[in-house]
Length: 70
Image: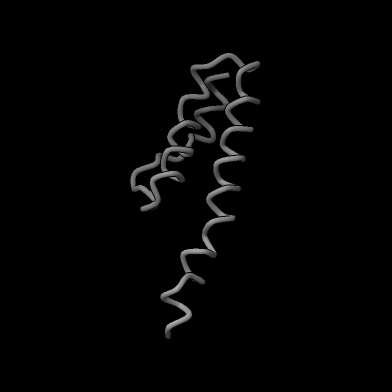
């Protein structure tokens, strides 16, 4: 298995996205190698839910009162 990992090393998350929730989701994925595979689904579902909520709220930041005034 280490041979395959050496062929395609995981990219390092060097810089944050600037969004606290997104950065936390990315960080939660970094620990998957150390967790049993049967726990991965719960991590993916949590990540998906968090990112979906974040994206759903993204428009409210742009389309909020400040955008209406301009």
